[in-house]
Image 1 (tube, rainbow, N blue to C red):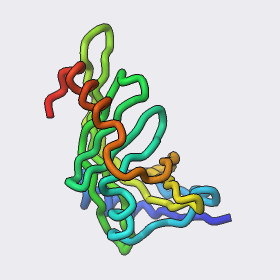
Image 2 (cartoon, rainbow, N blue to C red; image 1 turned 180 degrees about the vertical axis):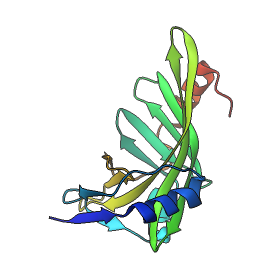
Image 3 (cartoon, rainbow, N blue to C red; image 1 turned 90 degrees about the vertical axis):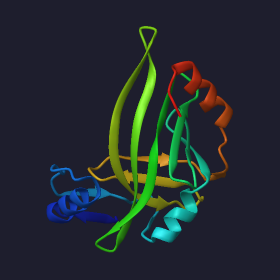
Image 4 (cartoon, rainbow, N blue to C red; image 1 turned 180 degrees about the horizontal axis):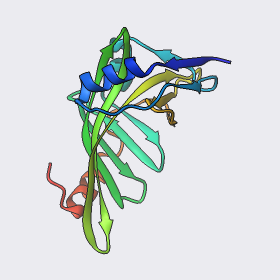
Length: 165
């Protein structure tokens, strides 16, 4: 079984350097046995992420080569807009995102965020990715799909919700 140890000091230093936040999760061990091989190179994470769409959760995310991040739910009821970048600290690179969610609630557009998170990126043998959030949760992304697969759907949902560019 593969395990990764996260130390509070390293975690706090990373979070402080990236987002100027003051809180961090306590040290934890996470099981990475089924997540694949960690991708630690900034260049490799960028190669895997930039300009690609991914199936994740109940929709698709797109990480633009310009650092834009866009997500649309399958039913177009909500979107996520924000930015992404790769940040390296203490010799390890992570995918960092800042996002705001937008969706309809009681007939009105509601926005939540911005949220900030960083993920350790894992490459699975089948070519798909898994992302492990600093703090213990992880989820799977599908295989990279070149281009913005759901651009038309995202733009239609963005206009319907009245979310500016």
